[in-house]
Length: 132
Image (cartoon, rainbow, N blue to C red):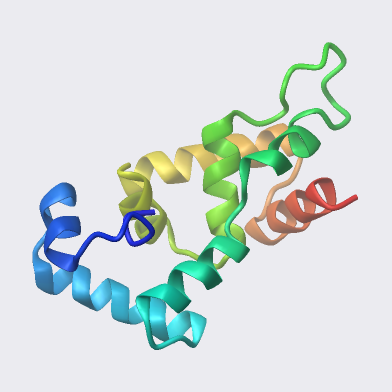
């Protein structure tokens, strides 16, 4: 996460090829969404909410994979984790440096691998597998 690295809006804008105004609006939206008023509080709140690597093996090694291969790729796992937080495909794409259509493809692949059809089912299955 760019905020965690202590970057300013200008630095984030430059790294993401966005305007400072766009970054400021997105950071403000995150402040409202997470009910915080400082970057430190935002980073703390988001880091508590985002999926972390230690949880990946739980989901990656659940039933459906006889040879121990992951059910979801690390990228699919990451994208579904953001979707669980209620992020739009566009917001997920922005955060991960992908196109919104790539995010859609990753979500559809994850849903197919988990045997679900809707976004709500995908989120429920993700949560069930992540926290058995």
